[in-house]
Image (cartoon, rainbow, N blue to C red; front, side):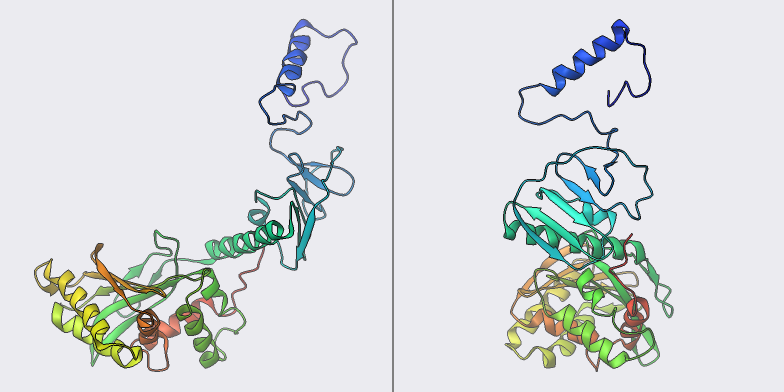
Length: 338
């Protein structure tokens, strides 16, 4: 019913055409509170000479690179606060609600909203959408070379695969390990050319992964056993790695060890090949699961960062994990529009 009568018609319209016009008038005049417009072709954007306009004041972008056909229309823009941020824009970034108008070109987003705070919130949401879209486009599953264990590109709770490696003890591959984190942590590696400034890149990734914030609230490690070990042995090894890095109460590390032992005991006391441990590190502590079964959380400030350090500091237990993270994400620009 959008523009059903474009083109050349006889002055006398058919009864069907008159009926459609009447329906159109009734819908447009409905009293239910939302405006209905018939001057757009379905969900497609429409154009005046300079701008793309979508909906009623919802979106306004420069069409220089749109490649869409022009179409004349009018736009009424309410007067309100506006904020501009210099950041390239993707289509994902433009599909944002709660703003009266979003304008964009290849260099900036400009949001007009009821107040400056709302506009700034929409800008941040747009920036996050750009980063998440870029990460989604570039992330992929990885296979750890020494063990043949594969890790998914993304966890169910939205954390992205940073890299994977192996924990060796002498010549034995004890477990394969993968690190998952947020796009903000991945972005920390973008300024470093692949294969160069590895030390600096490692420090940047470590800091981003262990300094928990609203944008990076969680960093997770997934371990898959490739060598059989009893619960006390694997728990003791992890606890011994955390202890010197934690610097807090020894009871916290002991609790971590006990939760690991408890999880392995539930499956017969042996962490057999294929057993999967997951450690979710946050500002509040570390949550542990074994084969998908939650064992509990060690609530202690600093222990989450200490566990990140086990795998990311200059004495990391899996140098292969660090190398994989850098090789996968260094030099990847997460602001590329998609």
